[in-house]
Length: 189
Image 1 (cartoon, rainbow, N blue to C red):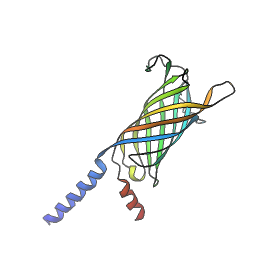
Image 2 (tube, rainbow, N blue to C red):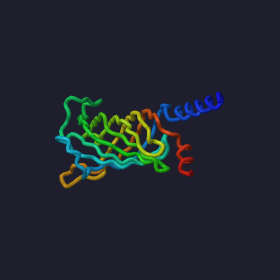
Image 3 (spheres, rainbow, N blue to C red):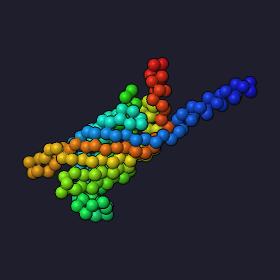
Image 4 (cartoon, one colour):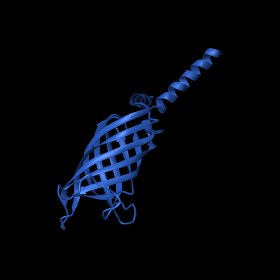
């Protein structure tokens, strides 16, 4: 009986260890950004919609996200260059879809855009809170930092950029996620 209890405890600790460990994350991406038809109804904002694909620590993924960006420069923020103007991002969310079908949900905590009108590019830094998901990310939590460089591809009739090429990376940590190998075993059963 003593051995059965010991084995049960070891199994519980092993499973808890798989789901409790904190994993450093680094993922790169590229894709497009454009004005979104979805209105997040944040005061004085426009809405952007991103479609990215990438690879990294957690495997290959796609990401679809929607963000609200202030219409007017935010004087409370700072940018590294005097030629850049700061805009904030008060709301947003995204869903990563990983190879194998697992989803990872994130919500925007803070967001800052530095737009350089002379260089015709923007640099964005966003902090996302992980709020779970499906499959191997069912119990996931953590924080991801998103850094992005955006360059215009298409402008409207008023010469306002409306469609962009984007590249960047996500860094941070994720806890409570099963390993990819365990997800494949679950799919086979």
